[in-house]
Amino acid sequence: MSDEVEVTVAVADGIRIVRAVGEFDTDEADALAHALALPAGDSPAGTVIDLAGVDFADSSFLHTLFAAQQHHEQAAVPLVLAGLSPFLRRMLELTDLTRAFTIAPTLPAATDLIHTRIRLPRQR
Image: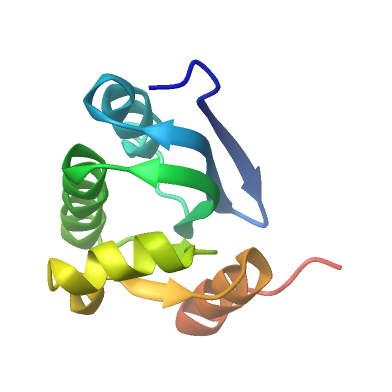
């Protein structure tokens, strides 16, 4: 796979934003899993995974997303996928995983979903 993989984590309005960019296979899944792990002793209002920059993903990528969803659910922390390409959306449909996730078309829509779900005041 490409060496052009990037996973970043930022916090905005108490929401963790994990941004993934590039082509993801088994070798890159660990970086994503590490970024998606909930910090010990910290309970964010929610996590958004911005996937708009993901060009390719294999089954290990889907496994990583599903494991993160399960961990977030156990911790009662909302997790929302944002910006899915048609390729990623189709992968989720083929594996019947669309019902396992909350999916938003864009990053702002995803953060709005979390704000609405937990009634966080929005910072402007």
